[in-house]
Image 1 (cartoon, rainbow, N blue to C red):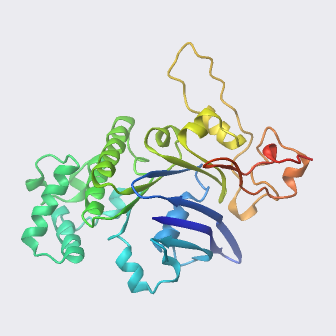
Image 2: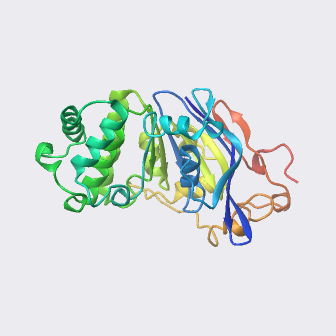
Length: 322
């Protein structure tokens, strides 16, 4: 369905050029959930915005392909890309309050969206809006359609954003940290809702998160990013059963154990993630890696296949470690 190949995205910052996404490749098959995981600054959100063609004015995709059902979205005319954006590929932002217009009622925003994408009158659009709000468990939807975003809690606003995106009936939903601003109980409700909707509609989801614990529960495949690069790919069973990259191992070790009798020793990484404006040479993780070797600082490792659906970019698994 979606195939991203060697995607590179750069930002112009003053006199410098910063590559925020560097050679990223992955696929999202039909009727599946793929997770992208990494720390803040790893390039997850920029990857999503590059796919959607919603980059800031100082950013551009410099190379690569974003194939949607075989057609390259990056080379399409803007009017053709606009037909895909929203209607076929939907995007849920981190902050729902920033995505909802504060001066229009929820109903107004739903009706405008539904009429635009489905060519129906306002009465039918309102009926569809009520049904969508019911689907995302908004109580008393007939009345609440006339309320404004500030009259809802943050969790309710995120549900509304999900419903508004579903109003366009997309085949792929990109959820960019959809629970980042919510407390733990609301997070679980939103993610369970997304999973339920994905199963009912048989659509695909690209779930972006910094929390490996979240993607473990909901994703069919996981992609790990670090400083603009992919460092490991695999199924949840592979990633959690036998994490290969030292960065993946550190992320998993940071997940608290629910067993009070189990000894839990998280891997403590030294320093912070480097700035994209000053990327280390060689392996980008070598400045924080507990297993660093001389070769790591000189030559950048490439993703190599270890087994079916499993890839890792690390010299620990190459034939020559010198």
